[in-house]
Amino acid sequence: MKTNLQPLKISPNGRFLTCQDGSPFFWLGDTAWELFHRLSLKETRFYFQNRIDKGFTIIQAVILAELDGLTTPNAAGHLPLKDLDPCQPNEAYFKHVDEVVAMAAEMGLYLALLPTWGDKYNKKWGTGPEVFTPENARTYGEFLAKRFAKYPHLVWVMGGDRAPEDKEDQQIIEQMALGISTFDKTSLITYHPGGGTIASDLFPNASWLQIDMFQSRHQKQFREYRFVNKARSRKPIRPVINGEPGYENIPNLLNKWHFQRLNATDVRLSAYWSMLSGAAGYTYGCNEVWQMHTEKSNPLFGAQMSWDKALDLPGATQVGFLPKLFVKLPWQEMVVSTKVFAGLKWPLHPQKLALTTVDQGCILIYQPRGSKIKTRINRSILNKAEAYWINPQDGKVEALKGRLSNTFQTPNRLQDWLLLIVSGSYQGQWKFQKPDS
Image (cartoon, rainbow, N blue to C red; front, side):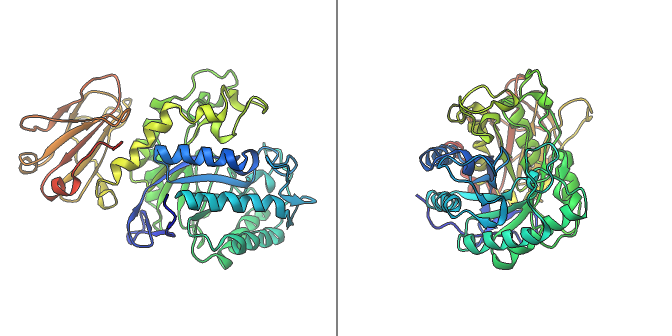
């Protein structure tokens, strides 16, 4: 098992994440919000191993959890705070957090830690109670940083599905972030906003906001590229992460009738729309897994199965192809390009996207719906290029035979496809293998 995880840092161009040695880091996250609250250590190890096997690189979890996390004990029977006071953390609860953090490091997983869910300072639709003030938020942030700063595999995530609604909310978040950054000089910090919101909408100039994160709504065809494009247009330049997408097996738009659930097709569309519009990473989510649902818990949003069964829904396996493909490409050198495409752009059709190196020696195209892809790639490049269809459902690769033209017909019209075109030195660098190898 990998035990020498390096701290993450921002790439020189400000757009991506790398390890300390400069090697690219692909953020493929999973929303395990109730991890510390509902799972035992044995269950946590089982969960981590499942996600490692599928290719996930980072797990997002909440220390003061959303689902009555202050007054309902964790799996070992411990509450996180004494007298609901953030200045009085319960050592027994945080010993469990210690063990989970150490386990993730041992197994080679990064953790994106939310100090608290948003209802602990802005109850709104949550259970709360609201326990934070600017003063105790600073103390709590300092406590976390002093306790966990020794670990190199952490990212801190402020917010917890909320926007600050008044000056006090703003100060609570700022002070908590300041408390962490004062004593943890290594770990990066980001912010998890509410649905349809980007962190830089709320904290555009915050010095502690190093990664810009947004949340898709739980909605089919949300067009995530709009949010990546918006975030990437801002100054200062930051890496952009889709930190909470539409969850697999959750009802569309969270409808109360629990019909038209999001499926693996919706997951892939969200993931590739995020990544091919220039995001630095993507976080998968599953309705049953975020809440760690069991037959003994209240099934939120129509949860249909236990979390351990939901781990193997097809979307979780399919997003695992993302890092396995991207790490074989010079993806942090590639840029978003609309000039690759020829022909009309139909506004009602799901949008195809492309990443390309500046010299068009490596081009990756995502086509959400099977059809012809008309391009305007230089003939001198095509004459010497190799092209491959990649099936995002199973990772299988099919080489195109014969001379390439500027029109490519997908193998079938019933699904989405990736088209990879490589020429020149990129053919030798790529040395393509199946993503699941």
